[in-house]
Image 1 (cartoon, rainbow, N blue to C red):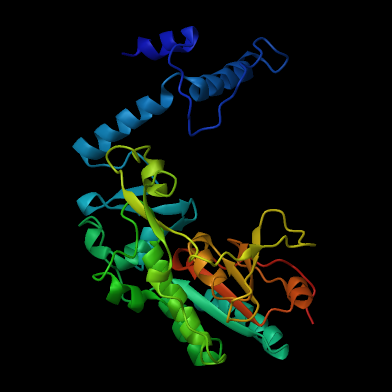
Image 2 (image 1 turned 120 degrees about the vertical axis):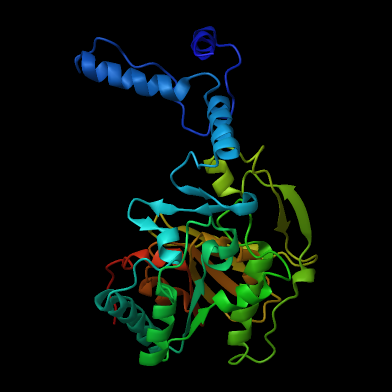
Length: 364
């Protein structure tokens, strides 16, 4: 069994076509001026990435671990009950599970930093007659605690999102929409998070969208959210969406899941427009114009949860700019140029594990 991959490697028989990892196409030069040790390390890396059937071997090994030993072979994923998967950590400095069970709360200085950051933005926008809304999307592990392993228990009451919500409401007029209670109340009606993905379902995202529209209906007459039934849907087998199952390479076997995808309502297809003079290359941007939109021009700064809301928001806004920015920065120059009436920040609570980054820009 150990010899077969080596044999296949040098005979080029049955090479995997869809390795998840980036393949190194050519072998590194041996006996180069870098020295033998460096050459061997480079060749080891090449061999690891180009080994035939590597993906199949990884999937087989992960399947054995997950099904028969009950341990996640990937540090970033936690195996829950009833074949539910949970994101353990985003990176080395942030753990979603530690966050959800309230291992560590905000210190006063960190809480004040978040408040000061958004209070500056609120004042900047209010001076120009622009509405600001902060939307907090709960972690999957916050909503579906019953599917977490028995060993994971809440340490203290409340979370950082609760601290943010309470502090903002007590110290300012900044509108904060915390979606936790809404999603908890609706999860028996229909699943609001995927079983094999860390993100919410299209129904969960629709609930969030409906609350956003309900909030702005206080300021704009005739603004209503579209019904969930208005959006055509299609059931797909979701390897491309099941991020947690894909980390385990088990999206097509042990953790296969059929997922729902939505489309724009019939007769409504907002026009996608190029956003000019936007210099931040690492921030993914999109711009939609909808002649039938009832909500005025909007700027939405969001994380990956906001991607699922795009069709909902674009179907309701006359114009909307989406900026996928995990730094949740502020863009005063863009705001001055585009003149939106609304600015929305959508932040998943797992991103409250660290103080927000901020792009240094001139503000007045």
